[in-house]
Length: 560
Ligand code: FAD
Image (cartoon, rainbow, N blue to C red; front, top):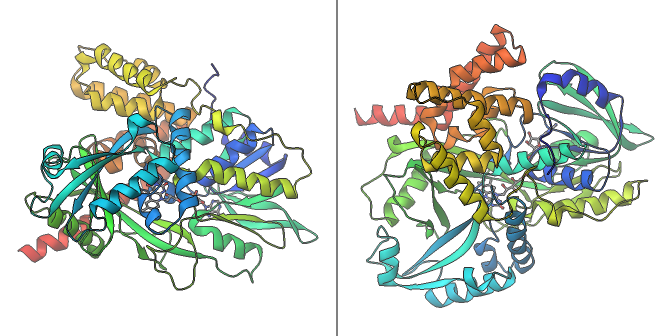
């Protein structure tokens, strides 16, 4: 069992000084899932590796996905057999290597008249899907008659329903998965910084050999050198390529994807349902704890990448799809609890709309030697990293070991199986039943932190003589302290959005926790009062944005 490695912004200045004095074998720009996967693969092969992220880890697309580790049934329709096979096989590997975080999920596909799939095409497609991904018999698709489908999911539209299919995928928390990869890389001697922005490249005789970084927390500008530089900046890949070579042409096509979050009581589906929207697209309704999230949209985007918003049109599209399909009382904008908006960094294909563009990844090597990777999926991060390391090998003077990520457990104290994980959650529930923590609270804590959930609970020092509020605060402070020490949290939203997802799935607790979180961050990280206040203001804006306060206000005014 390996130990938990400190990974904190408390000793950032010393770490940055060391980074400036080091010549790295590999520098990776972009702390989303793609960069995180590359850094882990490289560190496990023994390369001296550095990861640089301008905001927080996973603050780009990698916290805004549908959070499925899946082959992507719809890509079969586009005959993307290679992509479906690769990501299909990767699902089980991701689960095996992080079973606290990548959980099996039964999906329900209702077959409706005039829908995307007929009964025959759905059965054939999912059989092929299961076969391509070598799904074990126990998890293979199961057909449901109309009557059985209605029993499984009573909210389905009985008048147009013909039958249903249950099939297997995996569900995760994308930001946590990114974090877990980075922590594993750091445990294997990689260095990684959040809130450090690459503002230009350094070169020697036309060959890129370093980066100039701006420390967003200290405002210092420094140079860091390395032999090979990888640009894994997702939607920003073209900007970095153009920073390297002004004449580089754009390769990306960005597509915006929105999810909305509802209280589960508004849409009480029992499993994740993959259903037909009214325009020939398909979207998901996925239950998660007390919430259900619905998404996604898929529209061309050319606006500001730093200021993504769910518009009234996006929200109405998703609400319209739910209201038309499910047999529920009408759900309106005021019922939306939270939302998130992300950008798909797709590789441009002439003449294709956002839904038709391939999700395959592609590698571009510029004349300066900068290696860029674009496209791809959350699910394919491990294979993308392998491909990038092959390209790095071509440019490096180092000898490389083969990739070790296929059987590498991400957590420092891994569970051997999903059964062991669920037994752990049940034992916690038993131990903490006097503290009004629900099974779902403990399940979330254990999927976020694995076996470290026990340490966090012990350090929370909850007492039966305390009030519920005191115990709630104790647990919040203990989680935050862990994330400051071991997960480089600096800003309130690093914690409330990407380490525990309260912003999306428990917005009331995010609102309630904001002040205490901001004070604790200031105390532990020596943040001056002025800076604390401006952080707080920014966090409040994010809260208002995600809960669609502006759209709700206009909707109230229209109703008056
Ligand atoms: P990002 O996560 O965006 O990371 C790039 C990082 O680079 C950012 O954090 C950014 O801040 C940083 N950066 C940019 N410029 C600089 C700089 N100058 N210096 C330092 N850092 C910089 N895939 C699945 O497998 N399953 C799904 O369910 C799924 N659903 C999706 C739903 C939606 C709506 C979307 C948009 C995508 C979905 N995907 C899904 C695809 C998947 O989320 C993406 O392919 C993946 O997250 C992209 O990760 P990335 O690391 O390449 O990019």
